[in-house]
Amino acid sequence: MILVTGATGKVGRQAVNQLHEAGVEVRALVRRPEAADLPPGVEVVGGDLSDPGSLDTALDGVHAVFLVWPTLDADAAAPAVVRRLAERARHIVYLSAMGADERAGAVLGSHGYLERLIDETGVGRTFVRAGGFAGNDLGWAESIRAEGVVREHFDEWRRSVIHERDIAAVGVRALLEGHTGAVHEVTGPELLTAPQRARIIADTLGVPVRFEKMSREEMLAGMSTWMPIDDVDNVLAEMDEMTAQPEPVLSTVAEVTGAPAHTYQEWVADHLADFR
Image (cartoon, rainbow, N blue to C red; front, side, top):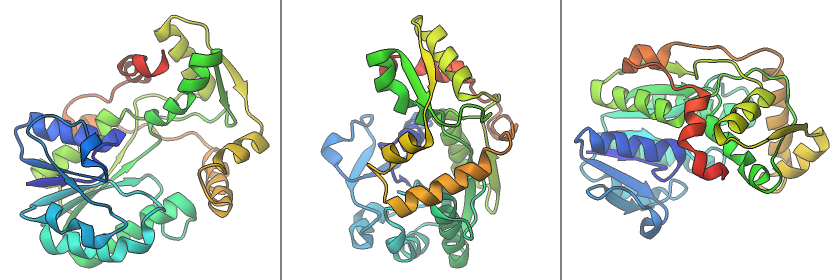
């Protein structure tokens, strides 16, 4: 039995689907089981990573865990949660982030913190450190539908964004093959700026989409609606540092899965319904 947390998110849902298609017994941990909408045959169990006591049923009989962590939201509960996972499972595959470092602030610091907690348990583990998620560009969908526009502040940042299907595929291989102690850094296959990605969306949709550079003040105001202001400042500081140079393009997806990473155009094609 493999437990997948965050099982209704972009990567978690892909991991559940891929494990299920491989004939593996898979259990999905979700906050709202009635709204999970996962394939028939997948066991769905309610629980919340911010509440360690809610995990006992989900962990019963579990051999391995694909851990998608609600970064920042549940960090206070992390030591107790990680201990529970390590007591029940023999292998934890943790979806981390490229550049994870506990000394960093905000998101990268949180991922570094979780990595340390997992290592301290001594449990078999694999870290899948992902670069930028192509799925984050779904944040443009509403403005594309309503106005035919993409607004973004970092217009010159060359990113190797990765399809959630590829992130999950690397994690699934690690779960099924072991990969104990490995750190897999994964990216997409090409470097693209936000304006270039907007053009790919337009070409794939077959409709005009223009790019508008968002001011820093507009970006801060938007992020402040869903993130504490101190965290916003830390995240922006991280992004300022990261955008100073292009992201790497790595061959990890092909090396681990035997298939090349999906292009951004392929990701857009898989999400046409979201942009229309």
